[in-house]
Length: 110
Length: 113
Image (cartoon, rainbow over all chains, first blue to last red; front, side, top):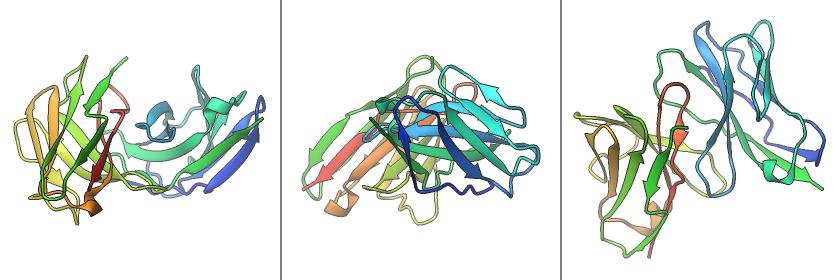
């Protein structure tokens, strides 16, 4: 599975959009990009995933560059409850294990 | 949505004893489940892949005789930490895959005293 690189931490003001970047320059054609988040002392929570098209759901939007070497998770109106560690993971379409990197610790501040 | 239930959420045990952690898929069948361990301020580390009806596959460096995994049904996998020591104190998390993505349990905080 391809590796991902994320900034270790980010701050965001409450009510503003949080844009979390992820580099996955070695991603292969059949690998999806998944985003999860983990609030302190809880299990990870699924946010969104995509292959090559941009995706949006009730939680977030996922923007994948045309060459698929990077992506951005967008939380449109961050709240204090969005404070968490966000993980970007690439995984092939055949399934298999999820390997977590270090993630980005997002702090949403009032 | 798909739910994975993990029990217990917290356990304290004495050094040298064994502890069993259960992971159940509540509304779907899971032929494969995954066990992770997480130390404070660190990311999740995959320990093993649990396969229904067959032996688990352990990641490099994980002692299979210490971390016993049983996946006897399509909805239940168990992780037993045998002869626990203080260094085994950690946050243990299981996951399973319903249709797409993965659903995670809420985790088990193990403290060995």
